[in-house]
Image 1 (cartoon, helix red, strand yellow):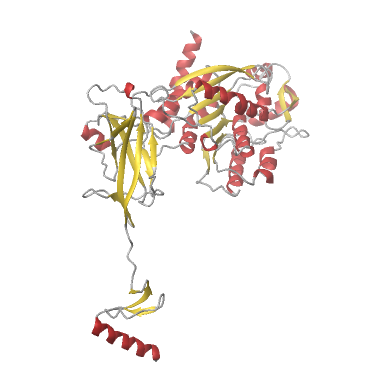
Image 2 (cartoon, helix red, strand yellow):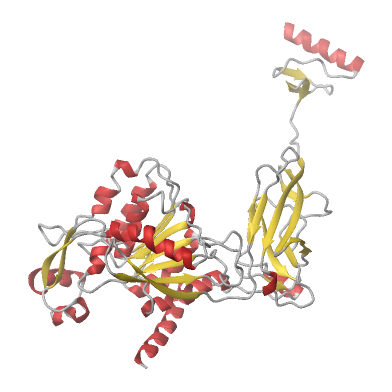
Length: 524
């Protein structure tokens, strides 16, 4: 009753003085219009209006060697984008501030519906990121995917003296990377070894740019490794779906089963040919088109013999970290990003096993990993010889010391549906490993761990190369969309680098073409 009387008195007070009744903070109150509200900040409010932010600022700097610009009349850089005063039709000229350096400042506002240019009329509102491209003379379009600034950004207000700064390193002409190799002696695994290198298309064009690095097992100078570079070139330059990276490949295995020694993390038993080699089907003891069951039975009973593999995988990883990558860094003029988020490892079969092992046991070194058709079955059971121990799943993944204080990582696992035969069970073990990883603190499926099974795919090198693009795109995606919206590139007449839409079949076709060329080359 008393509350009702107070409300009536308050209402009369409002009518006489035309002001809100003095309210008690956070308690119910009555507005001048007689509406019920709550007291906040000494005011009786029925709702709280969102307060936009203004005078926000960040800066973009583009670095590019002016000596490489082919335009003769206009050597300035321009920028186009999806908002904050930019559009995809006409570029804004960037300010040249020093040698090979161009800048542009963005002044913008932020509200509950997005971000927009502060001093522009009818500007587009963007909600999650500013995507943009750099052009020479507003005509020659950059190659690769869009650059992007994820919004919101930290510290853009006038309170901060130093505003956010984003540096980018565009390139405009080169679409083909370069492969090379070098030799290096190894105290870890012995002898002189040949190392494969792939430098991305922009490497010689924009000498300011630095790159992530990927250790890829089973790549050797020459041979089928020649088939990989065109696939990577397409991803980086034509489709623009992947950011550029440097590949450091190891595949220099000495004769007499050294691949098994170097790509296995723990000692184990394996069946090798009693006579001949796997290349001649154990001196023709194995049929040409054998099944997994036939292979296992014949190797155990007739064609094979027990062999003890010492498991020198850690030695190979030490060789990479201590010797191979420092030499590659020297050859790259210190343009390799060697911090953990920019260091990856990938491989197929035993190489896939080693990739998972490297990532799991050395999370301070490897931030990225692709384990493709990984031989998680390793080793064969020493007693039965027809079952497998799955050491990585049963021991390494369950080791508590590797589950604590892990650095952030991104891990991709995949296999074919036709790799499920016993005792190896690559398909099933790949899914099981992914589930175990995703249940480890710090990992979430589809956030930083991914697993895919490819229907109809078996265990071959061709299958690896035909889907390797997916691992690259997942681990190192471009910041933004693959290219400027098509209608704007055509309408403005700029020299656009059109991105083809590549699916698995396109890459498979590319591999077949390159493989045919390789065979012809080898026969001549």
